Length: 395
Image (cartoon, rainbow, N blue to C red):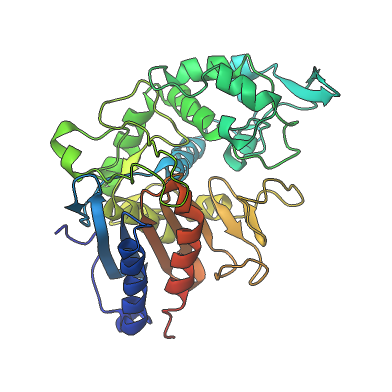
């Protein structure tokens, strides 16, 4: 059994209820028993200490291997906060301004067009202003994801094979430079390959590959020993897997191959990690940029990243929940109510395509994360987990 990434304590010592957390565990065990959830690892920490760190179900439903707390998960878009931190570390070095056009550093993105539908035809029009680095970090660049719709731009992304494990990060930016934008920069919140572009920006500014930059400057300093763009052969038996078929629809489930090093180190979704590793990253954020004597960011930089950067800009209501805005790498809670899930103003969160999820609640000095590999059930389990964690507050 893996050790805790932070000091352990009893739930009551940090204002949580043991009986309520036992109830949470019973609910997750029940979901495993019904065959809807293959397995899970969940961790809750408050006031710098871990009160609950448990595993459930199977790590690999194909062979029945039990889940363990040190299981390695594909975290998909939980890569984005880590890469956003990497960019802001370079920002703290004075390498760029958030208002800089991305074309200043990636010239191929300087003259993009926007696709506008005119009846059955597509007209390509100039951008009204350049894409800024802030746009990329807050997803207002006008880029999209190929799986976010079936419109002309989504089809162009698919045809161009915008996701390709064998390309380099530079190759992907070169492909994006030949495709139109979905929206005018700054006009819509559209979840997108923006953070892949941020990953390439990190490479250009640092002179290192993205994985190497992360390893040197974030992962090794924080002691995140199992977070990388692939799982080495010696650890393949720790890799968590999904059901072969979605338990709700019967459709086949295919997750990214992480058993070999990819050419494409996706800043938006390529990392694997463990609960212990990601907990250390979240505690660093909750500590305003530092952990165990290592400082990655200033307090004011973390405050900037976890503030709302959208204001009146809206979009993608299926992902940007009611009552939330978006910062530089995180969704940010703006209202005590409105959202159908509990939380506190200032809370920030994100998740991954296969069902991994986290949130940080600075006002309550709490973070929680749950790692699963269940793409079709992700929205349900994210909300269920959040509901039951907040239901465990005892003071």
